[in-house]
Image (cartoon, helix red, strand yellow):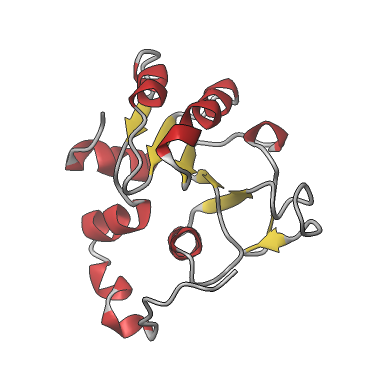
Amino acid sequence: MHNDIPQLRHILKSAKTIAVVGLSAQWNRPSYFAAKYMQEHGYRVIPVNPRYAGQGQFPAEDILGQKCYASLLEIPEPVDMVDVFRKTEDVLPIAQEAFQIGAACLWQQLGVENSEASALFLNDGRLSVTNRCVKIEHARIFGGLNWVGVNTGIISAKRPID
């Protein structure tokens, strides 16, 4: 795994386009926070979530001003990193799609560690990060932790009721 600071710095500096699998359109979800932060810091964020791509109970919609796709395979442009906001047991098929589209890095969010998915990337000389938040790591490495703290204007532990 590539979980040390020099490797994380390299990954975050080299990636320009991030597909976020499991990105929610709800502003108070962790996936939305992370994607919005990365977008505000110059990354192109591509939402991937069948629920919001017209495949689920809702009609197709944009998230953070970007078209949402049902799968990584539908994205019509190169993707540097795939950031996964899904359960560990759901990651392998996502990793296989990420591998197929040529993503250089598979990033598994906090609490997500699928070793088989990581091995797929590492055995091919690609990068894999597990159990880390891309937003937190970017802020930590590039000096932005003060931007994601109490001065954000949002303090909430409340989860929406579906």
